[in-house]
Amino acid sequence: MTFEFPPSLGVNGDKEQAAGIVSKIWGKKGVFTCTIANTLTSTIPGVSDAGDTPDLTMYTPAADAELLVLNKVVCMKGIPINPGGIPTPATLTKAALDLSRMPYFIIDGGCGVKANIPMIEVGGECGQKITTGHSVKNVKHSFEYGKILGAQLASYYDYVVISESCAGGTTTALAVLQAMGTVTENLVSSSSPKNPKELKSKLVAEGIAAAGKKPGDFADDPLGAIEAVGDPMMPVNVGILIGACNAGVPVIVGGGTQMAAVMAAAVKLDPSVIGKFFQGTTRWLLNDPNSSMVKLRDAIDARIPIVYINMNYSDSPYEGLQAYEWGFIKEGVGCGGSSVAAVIGSSGKIDCAKLLDRVHEIYRGIMGF
Image 1 (cartoon, rainbow, N blue to C red):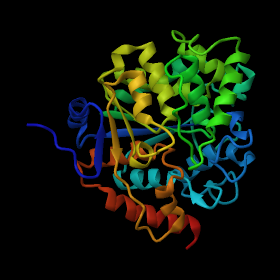
Image 2 (cartoon, rainbow, N blue to C red):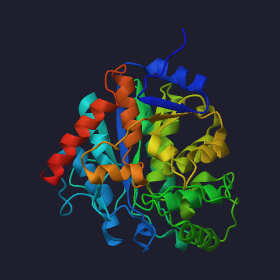
Image 3 (spheres, helix red, strand yellow):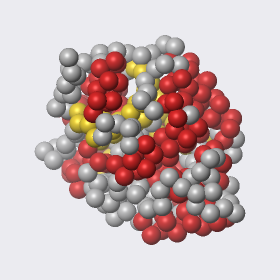
């Protein structure tokens, strides 16, 4: 009998492979992890819209994590918003976690601003600007801890979802992908419809040159690429992905083009992970005209399926949410991966309509409507 995907989910790429993994975990118990981290790259004006100002981008990961755990933000006033009052994608992540009752853990990949909640430590530190050419410390340590954590989670749960909140992370992802020679083109997304592609490409070129390397020089050294021009979210998530897959448990890589660098590094370090994971994201990301997750995936390995949640905010009464349909945000804080997991874990009982209702409740609560 072939597995039928419900209308709430779509698949891009190898449908057979996607159905094989999803059918195995359908109705089973998963666990969600979100690795939060900072890179000073996000404070370079124009790089990131994941915060009302460049300096506030440093608070976004901690605020996202606090929102998931505490239902409120403690580290800053208000909630993490884009310029124009568009709410963090953590609103959708929280809806998915609330409805599915999936257990979740926050990992401190390396934060400059710490969240006021219990977090799993992996020995990471806040990342430097990629233009230094040595942007991440303790990469090997974080990676090894990630592998241990992945194996630990695999012994208790049927599948593991990994995700991130790291402002500036599409720029660091592009840097690592070009340093590894996975892509030459700038295919990463942005939380704004006006993707600052020229600025990102310029910073990436500066960073790789500052490391004394050329694009492609890190083809066989993904951890070296992360150390030179990555961010602290990457090594631990690469480790969890490999650790859980090696322990025989499927992984959902929750997130957008930022997670392309994680997938590329994992596949290079351990090709045996292919067939054991898929990317879980949103239709907003796949439909983004200013980036291409499909081309990025094909450059890493065309066999990796992408399963996406068909969320649509067009009919939402709130303009802040409607903005997702106009090309803002698209992904982040594992909102796509957690939503896909909520549908899978509930055997399809949780769907886009239920998720949207819960998003509205959360949005009204945090906005004080």
